[in-house]
Length: 454
Image 1: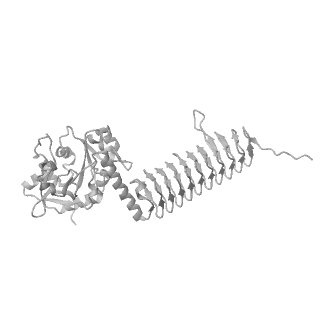
Image 2: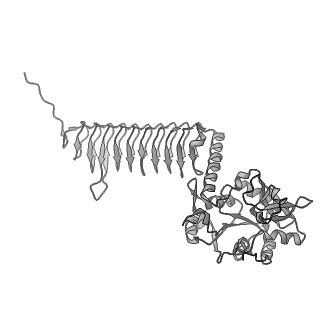
Image 3: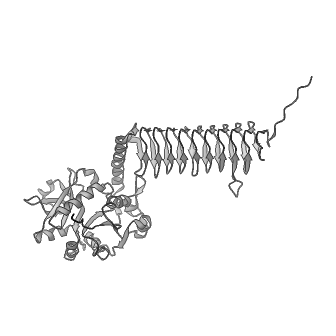
């Protein structure tokens, strides 16, 4: 069996991105909640054994910090064009790479399978270059591909240099390549400086042709992958395309999305089958949602886990865990550290933070539970507040099983309420309540029955 060549990747991320009108490096602007460069890293991840090389320049320290150990870095300084940028990676890759994929950090919609087809095409190519091209009625400023009689690429003509006839060509150079690495390192040294004082990677095509070598084109199936990000308008266009792609994939998997145009699902989200996502719902970050759950309309869920057979209406959930058969909302809010166990019901305008509600808890509307542990089948009446902050520390409230907390109860932490205890409506509880006891009043005291006189 023939051994596959070693594939390495270079991601160009040194540009300033002046048209973004931003102090943030262009490749760190967010698309569906993730920095643009993350998509380029994902697209090459399965092609290479070793981490890709990211060429950085403007804002390089920020890019390096964001990407971390998932890439290697070289600094292009000064920034003298795309050929010079690739040459910056030679020292790292000269002895490693047999095939070299070169892509950019501002084309986030390129799919991994597209780059895999590009590499496969170069493996079959007797020449040193296979390049990605696409057909579009709108040239988007890309250079035109001039084909030779045998179908290979004869030349790339930049749009500004095109003749009127060449401007009618609809096959475009997308600036993504797979090279024979050994040939490329030598060719880069022969690229001549342009009138602008830069060295362009496109010039290696002419060098290959001068040597009588074959330059092949691999045509992109879906041109929407080729959208590059140069302005915030482009960013919004890419957001729309990515949202459509993600929503389509989930609907094909078995998720109902009632209005895809107003549903926003991040690329890292996981959703179970037969779940229904209502309009104006945002699922972000590392969110996981189970089977047969109804989400929305009007929900925002971020970095949270939602179980099976839940119903969540018009609510916000952040860094929380919701187990099976939970119902919430409308207008409920789970903050960081909230954990609703199986069968919990949480009414409208409630909020939970850093607390666990055990199975079967019923939490009424207009209540706040913070830094608390609520036992099985306890009822939290409407308007109940855990007064957990004393001005210095957050204090804990612990409530046992089968407790009845009356409406408008103030629970002043630190506090323990035993199993089967009860509080009267409007009570202010400042002391621990033993199991089975009923307390009422301000401050709450044990309830005493009044004996009837004759």
